[in-house]
Amino acid sequence: MAIAACAALVLAGAAGTTAWHAAGSGKSVGSWHEAPAAAAGQTPVSAEQRAGERSQPATPGGASAVPGPSATRLAPEKATVQPSAAVTVPEAGSPERPVESGSAQANGRQRVGELVSVRKLLGYLGGKPRQETFRYPGASYVKLHFSRMALMPGDYVTVSNADGTESYRYDAPADRTERGDRWAMSVTGDTAVLEVHRGGGNLLGLGDLAGSLGVDVDRVARGFSRTEQDRQPEKQMTAPGRTGREESVCGADTSADAACYRSSDPVAYTKSKAIARLLINGTELCTGWRVGAQNRMLTNNHCFTTSAQAYDTEVWFNYQCAKCGGYDVYQPTKVWGSKVVATDRTYDFTLFTVDKFDSVQKFGYLTLDTRRPARNQQLYVPQHPAGEPTRIAGSLGEQAGNCAVADPAYDGYAPGSDVAYYCDTEGGSSGSPVISRATNRVVALHHFGGCPNSGVRGDLLAAKLGKLL
Image (tube, rainbow, N blue to C red; front, top):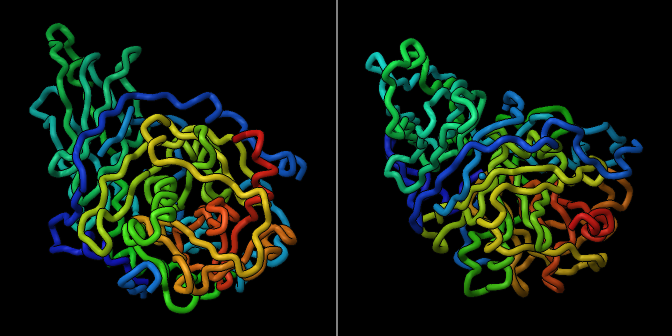
C-alpha cells in the first residue's frame, strides 16, 4: 500500500523532525467535560437488534487490541486549528467478502498507531518540572493519557504541538482537585508539549498537600510513521476469513486527493467536506460523516457501538490536502464523539452525536437517498483510506471507470441488504458514504471490500433512521 502524494510528502522527512505543515492558523482550547449519563447506560439499538501501491493521478480521473475506552475524559471546547449481538452471516465476511479494514482485529478497524507506556510526573514542589516534551520521530500524531490530574483551582494544563500552532487547554475542575484516567486530544505531528500553568494562587499553608499535587502521564498513543503504516495491512491481513488482499483497489486506482476535485468537480469536493476521520481508542481508524442538518454522524457498527466508545473517539473534520499533490495539510478541526443514538449489527451502522457541534456545522452534511440506485449508475466515495487526508474515488464522465453500481441488490449481512460496486477503497474507508452522481445523495454506507466492494443500502438506512435525523 502506498500513501497518496500529499500524505507521502507530508509524512516523509528526516528522522527527528516533523514534516507536517498546517494550512491555516489558530489555537484551540479545551476544558474538563463529564461523560453523559448515557455513556454508562444501555446503548440504543434498532428494534430489529433488540429482537435478536497507489499512484497519484494527474487528474481526478486519470493490532492487537488496545484497552477499552473509559467513560470519562478530557474534551475540547473548540478546535480551530479526531460487537453487539452475533448474527448469521450469509456471504459477507467470507474470504471473498472481507470487512473493509487493513487490520486483522476482530473489531474491523484500521490500526494507525500504538500505545507506549511512560511514567512522567509534572508537579508543584521538589524541583519537579512544569513542562515535559513527548517526542516520537516520524509519528503522525501524539496523544497523552493522564492517570492522575491533581491541580489547584484556577490552574490548568496545555497540550501543544512543537510550534504551538495546535494547542489544547484543560482547566482544573471547580468541584474537586483530583481527576484521572483521561485522554487528551491528539496533536498532529511527532511532538507533544505538556505544560502545567499556575493560575496565581499560592501554596502557603498547604503542607503535605502541595507535594501531592501534579499531573501524571502513564501512556501515549503514537501515530504510525509513513513506513510503519505501509507495513500494517500486510502484517494484519492474515486472520482466518481474509483473502490476503491488503487493499480493495479494483484495477487501476483512480482515486485522488479531494483537493484535486476543487475545480474539476466542485460538487464532489464540497460534499467531501462533510466526512470525518475517526480516531478510536487513540490507535484505530474509521471514516464517519454528517447525516442530515442536525447533530448526527454515521459510521459502521463494526467501528464502535457504545456511547463510552464514542466519547473516547476523536472526530477530525477538514483533514484534507490544501493543494492537489501539494505539501500542506489543512489543520483539522477536532471534536469528540458524544452519544450513540442507534446502532445495528445486521445493517452495520452506528448513529452518534459529537461534542461542540457548532464548530463543525460549517462543513455541511449529506443526505440519505430514499430510492434504490440503478445498475451502472455512477458513484463517488469520499473517504480516509489508511488514515490519509480525504481522497475521493470516482470522477466525472468516462474517467469514473469502475466506480459505478454493479449490483443494486447485493447480499451483505442480510439478503439484498447491500449495493455492490468496484470503487477503490482501503482499510480505514469503513463508514464512508457512497454517493450517487445522479442525486448527490448517499446510496450506501461502505463496509466491505473484496472487489466488488459493497455498502449497506441507503434507502434501508433512511427507513430505519428517518425519525432520528
